[in-house]
View 1 (cartoon, helix red, strand yellow):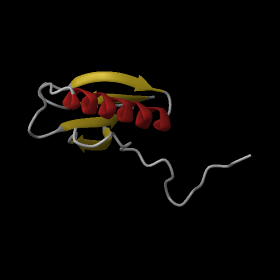
View 2 (view 1 turned 90 degrees about the horizontal axis):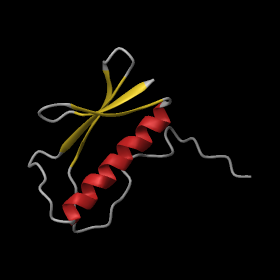
View 3 (view 1 turned 45 degrees about the horizontal axis):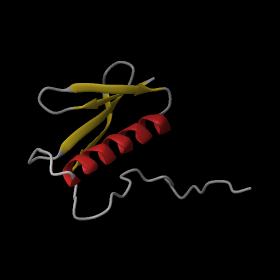
Length: 90
């Protein structure tokens, strides 16, 4: 089980996920949401948005700081192919 947190002040629990890939997808969704908010000219913090994926014991396993650029279309912040692995096509 993984937990996704937005670790601003104050830290805010966002959601959880069963798998690491699910957690990464949810972080990507949160970044897309923040990008859409920036494009709509809603307020955004000067230091960007910081997200954490935490393990079951609450320890941060991965962190990401995201600064939306509303002048460009959103691009996923998650790399789908890691370590040279490619998806099976069939």
